[in-house]
Length: 253
Image 1 (spheres, rainbow, N blue to C red):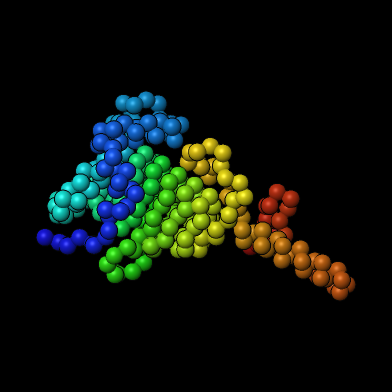
Image 2 (cartoon, rainbow, N blue to C red; image 1 turned 120 degrees about the vertical axis):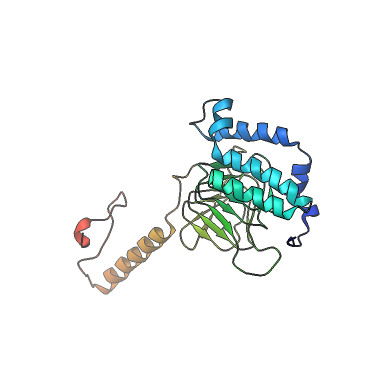
């Protein structure tokens, strides 16, 4: 029988929360959170039958119970069946809290030593992956109320602080403080001045800062001031308009 990675899971808050809630109570919570976070969800029955992301979570909870009882082969076999059925791969050794929601589901991968807090939302194509071949903690930890956009990759034994939002297709390789927004490759961390008033997942995917664009605009503005002082003026600079749109005449299209 294969060996499980030696982790001190007894002290994990995710595991303690899971032990305090029954399996069927967590199923009811999962359905409720799907109804709250997906405007397309119409009723309990539709969510229960048709939401593959929830099915993957329920398969995981059964497989995780087998894993904790050292039935590693059965746990991995069930998780692989769930992957085939739902398109979501969750290692049974991962620690996942309550009201976890995977919207659309397809292509999500969660590694063995990953930890996910309560009220976390993932979209399709998200990876919680490792960056080394050593045993032990090598996957990320997501605290409560984290939202991870479609296609984002969070790699390594790093922590994503509670209330943070990871933008679509971002690649996160360093720790993220609480109440932050991450965009870009590699992920650029933007600290929010004000914490969200509502104690719920932040699903505003359209509110992402353009960190590189803003840095370039500041550089160009500074160059303009320097040229004015030196009385040097160059034509043909590539700039955006007031709405941030590029002019196609400056490119070979």
